Length: 557
Image: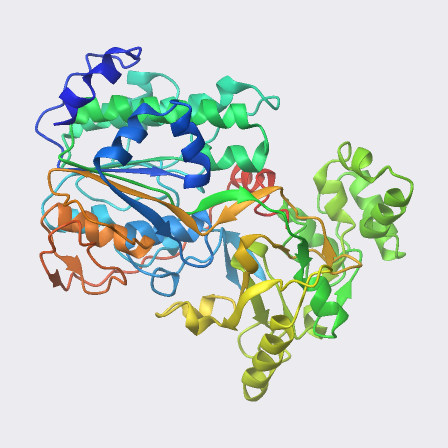
């Protein structure tokens, strides 16, 4: 089907693979393409400029709609929701970080406690190829191949063992993350896009899968790392469009879906510092200079945690000097205020390494705090509950009363312009359901129109400029085209993607899924699949992953 339709696209492209890219083996039944952060606000201008012929044709010939994200609309929880069809309360991932008391680690596939699409297909005797999907490392065994994406280390475990060496032998270098380069270097941003497409097509050639899933992350990363560089955005999207066109012509899928996990857009509101606000109302107590447990936001290097007990912990002398200054009350927050008064804050901030700034940050004194924000992308407040948290101070009997107080307080917050900061402040049970809801924040705080930028910073005032000029919005994209798709309107939710993919393959959805088969596909009912067998959780021990999350603003809250 697609090989003829997209033949012109393929013939017009440079053949970069190691062998001929004629249609591979039997017809791929379903192709799922993930484009992180894609949304109408970004795509429509590129369609009008004629830059994305493949994607535009899919929108014109298929069925499309704005894909509604759940809360929080960020990569680590959204892609597991897409590939499992369940909410975070069931799959267990709410953030880039997992928590044990006040300690944390970067999430990975061992934190996802529900079957992925390709695992369900394996139970049904179908082969899959999966490339670059976030939170899939380390992979579990199934019939097919998988190269993990975001949150995996740079040299990840793949399935089957040795497959990454086969891929690099065939296509050349393959990287999970872009090569570090100077800002604005286009090639370094485009290389990962090309690698995804080439690796996926090579693996499809080797495994002849019924289902394929390839994801492109650079479409999101560019807005975090180089906001406002719209020509670079155009180049990245053009590269993604070429890879999709080449893939359609090569694997010739019967049905193709294109989805994003959320949208992206400019933030015109304020930065709202939740922890500063909680401190000003007596719910949080801060400490300085490494005393007490550290807050999550300022930390990139885990060694800084040891500063609370006076150990040298391997830090440089400048970091220790800043720490010592903080003991005397001269924190980086106050230094920043002084620099701002003389107009030097921005210039100095650009020269001082982030780790030095964090060494002097104020921190949460958990033994004296009632509630706090752990990380901004959780979009909520955690209560310091006795019996659950190591230094919990709120008794179980007080829990609901404290939660009600905080909901009322946060619901009333307005910006300096008099506008509401939040469109919703409520109990977590309104958004999450399942055995892992306890891992979520206690109070969900949804910023108004996702135009107010929440942070976990502890600064002197509750409001400031947005932490990033571009960030996530709730509406992404959904496109479906092919021989099983009926022409109709569609109002998709991220939970609907997995059941709809199964329906397109003629397979029943799981009765544990929160989504439904969209009416563009004939549903084939539902069934009970074997229960997910939990494995021991692992921690991603790779400083490069934490560095990436920090550089894109996810840990610099």
